Length: 501
Image (cartoon, rainbow, N blue to C red; front, side, top):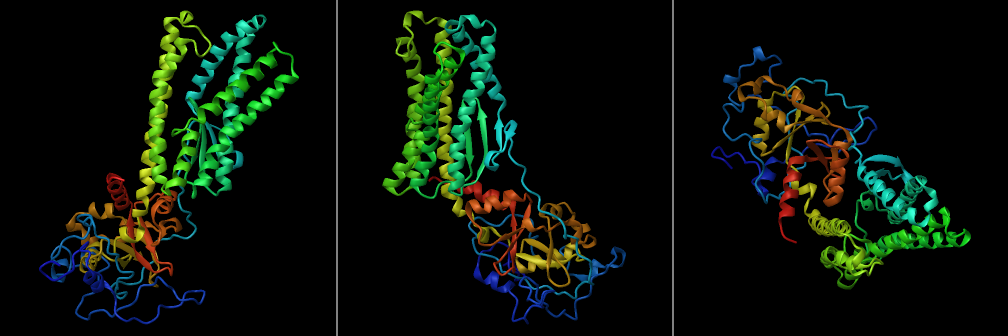
């Protein structure tokens, strides 16, 4: 409390919350459907000594009132964020005198739909199999050109009679190969959807593809299956292409294409089965360690460090294998340019694996700390006011209640809009008696009402679906609990991520 005895915002004591709670009040009025309004604001009698608000600035006399924030003691409740560690929840309701201002028309909110977060893009949209968007990254075109050039050179030795047509055949091979990669990723997607895990998108990029699954598997068994189906489909495709080879004449264009696709899918399956994150084999290893230890984080740490070891092995081992002739080419035939190309390819693959392993560790750390983000503990206590209330009077009430947010309600106590903190800060103190809170508010949409029980990833998903600066937090009964600031969530998120696992 300050010297005047008013409770200070963010004090975090039980007494502060009790001081702001209303006394015994009659049941809330029934709504239009005959049911009681759970989130209506209780009426309290007006102090006969308190002068009514003036409707026009020229008629107001703030110097004589003595209860505006310009003369009332106590700090501005919007001057600074609450102190760290204040996890005491705000009161569900703060009393407000409905007779302080004449009834006014609340901001219109009917018919407005919540703004949805823009869908993440990743290049050229190719389609939506199973409702999941598939994008081709710009880097794919560079790889397609590289495959066309390299495979075309090989075709010149195998089928010298093709001439320039060999590059058209090579382009077809590049497209067919990435179609196989798409099938690999679709296997992950179908398994994720079957386990009721949302998939944001599939992206075909520089080295293969990626299925962006938004949530983790609930059990290690599902994690193992989700990871294994991709390499399994690649092996199945390799078998299909092998059977196709048996049905065509060797040494022809179809035979060479089928052989190339068979070998490519075998390489994709074998590479992804390597036991290190971010590869599918790393996720399978993670599931095994998770099953043994009972801790998903332990599985992630083990698989990520194995992935980093694989990155170093690829960086050093791939050029050595090429020069030694273990990959089918003698060391004496390897030119200087080929050696540089092999080293560059190894460096790119190693960087991808190392970075993916590090990202897996960071994401696991993020999910470990996400449960610490709870709407109930991050919510600011709020004061309901009517739309014509001057900002100075609204801040005075917030200061007395120890609140740091304002909710505009109609004559029946229904919340209609939220006063933006940034707009309050932008109004000079000498102008606040003449500015109505309705001019600083954002209309309340359905997406801006969040449950006080939300926490972790579910809370972040809800806020991401409707981007806003403030959200109205309500109880399960519909009663106003307070206001959640997106800035507070961001600060809590950064603070949680800074703590070690």
